[in-house]
Image (cartoon, rainbow, N blue to C red):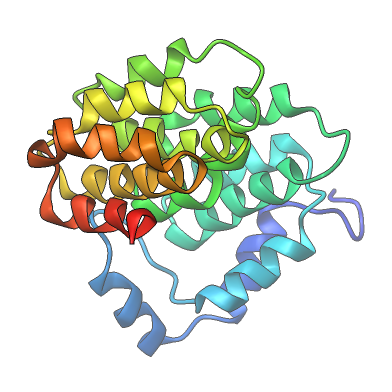
Length: 221
């Protein structure tokens, strides 16, 4: 029997289903990148409210949320991981290990953007980043997006060498959903060190997509 007041995957599912609407489901389905993704139909503001209410959920229950094929269930899961990663004294290794073990469930751009910078990037601030280079060379577009997105927190800490090396690998990536975040990473690099961005764009700018190039140049405006 579930303890009264416990933070559980079943409780999250019930909260989401009670907030679902047919109209919202149709809106969300239109922006899904994988037609196999199941959509409950809950507006994002409500999804994040449910995640915040469950922010102290045990990681075993977060893992159960990640098992779900429901888009909103997994969005709650990654949002909980992100909320926990912001908490002082948190076990960052446990968050990181769960995220990486369930990498196969991070299969939309917004799951990655919602959680990779803090859950993966903050953990790697003072560690080797070999895993990011492995992901950047993956055949899986979501792995490549994870690599550059996790680097956002590293860039914001003023550490630019590895993020720039990741941009070197991904500068000519054929996938739009990777290029968009390469552009964001370069923009943030430019806000820390404009000269290093200028050098990169002068050398590799033609390899970037037009979208990534425009985004990067915002820091030089």
